[in-house]
Length: 318
Image (cartoon, rainbow, N blue to C red; front, top):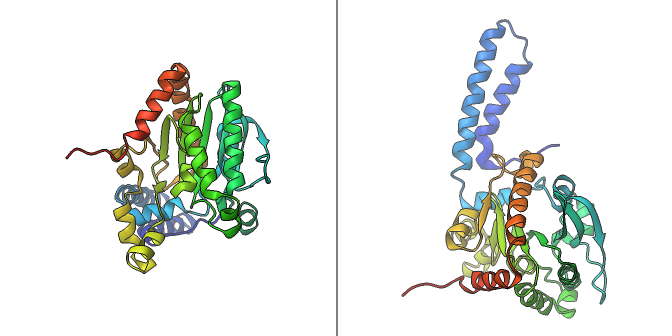
């Protein structure tokens, strides 16, 4: 699988290319070549650590949008078992941009919902690039209420540029559907964990993310608007997206400091697309740990903590 390359990765790619050339050329002195390869690999590792520990916000955006980044379907197969997809919102239709159903994680039954991006043109068209219409959010709410009825924890995976802004979505009540989800999630009588796994864009992300715990992958983003959209509004020019990305504080470390998320799940160096299994393992460990803790809490305490968590965001002292 050919991975997309970014400008800031060029120093790493040059070293990797040199290593491959050494490995493929006929070796006159095997020991000398092996030592050379070892030195270059050590240098490559150090360079990767330096680059990825000092990413700019816009570089983090690039990684979060990587076309080979794991999507919900990947995480379903790597983290969960016995997934049974549920369809339809019982009002209009079945939105493939946001899916959900019953699943099992470490012998615990849960309700799993999430944005459903694709990895090629056909998949993305079918799933509308993970941008849900109102029927997607109403389906998600139906499944949340079903989980509440049977006492199952809810786990959501957030990965969308935003809710679909098309005319048909607006005609069917996009804003109302998301607003109702926010209200119902705030008082849902069952544990709720949200995972920001890729892009977390605006109300489209928040529509399935009012959780008792909000986890975020280290190279994911979570913001009220895209950098390009923000730049178009403030500077009338999307070319100012890097400045907008910095101002939005959309990276995991900034959001952790602001109290918007609760925990950062560290990805493999370079991003989750470098090693699906390693990324999924870290997510699974965090989910199992928090599920165990939340399931032991009384519902009244859970609701009180959830309300305090979200109502306290944005507070400041004069």
